[in-house]
Amino acid sequence: MSVANPVLHLPSPAQIAEGVRAITPADLSKSPLLGILGVIIGAGIVTLTGRMIGLGLADLKGHVGVGFDAGAWIGTGYDMALMFIGPFTVYLGGLMGARRILLFAATAFTVICTLLPFVHNYALLIVAIALGGLASGTFYPLTLTFALRNIPLRFLPFTIALYATFVDGAVNIAPTLYGWYRDHLSWHWMFWNSALITPIMMFCIYYGIPDTPAPKPSSEAPSFTGFLYASAGLAMLLGAFEQGERLDWWRSGVFTALFAGGSFFLLCALLRRLRSPNPLVDMPYLRQWNTILLGVLLFLFRFCLVTTIILIPQSLAVHGFESDQIGPAVIWSAVPLLLVTFVVALLLLANVDARLLLASGFALMALACCLNAGMTSAWSASNYYRTELLTGVGQGFAFIGLVSAIVLQGIFSGGLSKPQWILTLSAYFHTVRLFGGTIGAVAMGHYIAHQEKLHSNLLGLHVESGNWTTNANIQGLTAGLFSHSAGLAAATGRSVGIVASRLRLQAYTLSVIDGFLLVAWSCVCALILVALLRNSPLTYGDLSAIQQGLAADKESKS
Image (cartoon, rainbow, N blue to C red):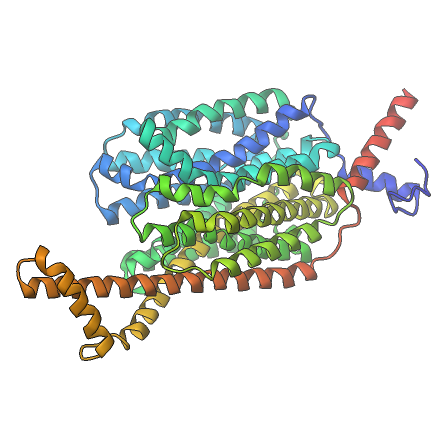
């Protein structure tokens, strides 16, 4: 390989060789396309299942005969299990091998999803949901680890693009898919859908990703106690945040117990880590500028997803729309993802900086939120089509750029040279991803509730008895309702109720507009952080050229 090659921008053959050794995976897949498919399916299944549980919560509550308070723990049980297994996956993957854990967990998840619709007891349903979360929670960190260590670098940009597309697309396609299942088949397919897809992932992982030998047993087996403390602490904190708004935060003993218990377990994990370091985890490896900033950016991106998860669905649900009616508005953000996938992958191979893609995505999302801030109470699903199309392009660029930057950071920080480093990195971003989604949803829900009360109070100041505008409206409505009411008093009462409902609708519309503006400002903050990211030494095009040159040299020598 020539030293003066202008594509690589490396000053000497020694540095090129050192870089190749650092970035080339040790065990490349013999069937990279199957490996890529297994990786992206595993990432999409976790997101789709969690979204389906949220959409079908009413059907699940009716199925087991529980009310609102008890039913709220169904989704939380799944999310807490996802959070618990995230850090613990580092221990399991390092001790038994990631491929073995994935195949076992996928098998268990398939069986659980098949049997879940037949569970009629609330306690058993919570246990089954939690077990499903424990099984599927291994997919995200371990499939990302496999992608970095086993897929040839020339396929890595397309893997990243498809990976981000499946995760983002699963969020936006879930309402339409669930609505179709419920109307044409049954709500059972919210679980059977995952039970049919997971075996495909298992087949792709089994044949597309090479097996790695289990680590050799040492004189002293690594302890799982620290992982157990950290996993339990993070899971309890996640449950506290998810249930905080419903439980009224510190006024609830359940919230206080979850928060205090989670904090105590995290403190125990920290003290144990300081006393006896674990060879399977390396926390100091995460103390890098880009790693920290990318974690914050992932948190902000997950918060910005509330546009399609909370704001638009709730702005339509207040009119009484169902999932199948809300779905057409949200699915438009998933329509451009496939095209965006290949465009962005080609841009990455053409040496386009991942930070530029990331910044473009956040800018487009901010623009879409500003356009949505012009909504009125008369908007329907069709009013969101164009802005959701813009949102989909922005989310695609932002997420693919974000994952690309994370992968480059893992490569050039030496993450592939030690298994514990890449497992630690994957578990870190898995934890940030879950907390970002949960805290983002909780924060936006609390913000909308607070703003709705504020706008209701401000609007109510102009709707008072004796005001000529108010009296004229009530009298006009009373005259129209008198013939269909049991007397003048009943007609007047119904008129006052209609005026109050109009007031609530306008207050809720204004609070959703405030939510769009908050997301737009969050995108602006993300753009500032993107500007602070440090540039990677090489791009994906450079990495692919290095690996192809290395393969050519190896063939010529042989």
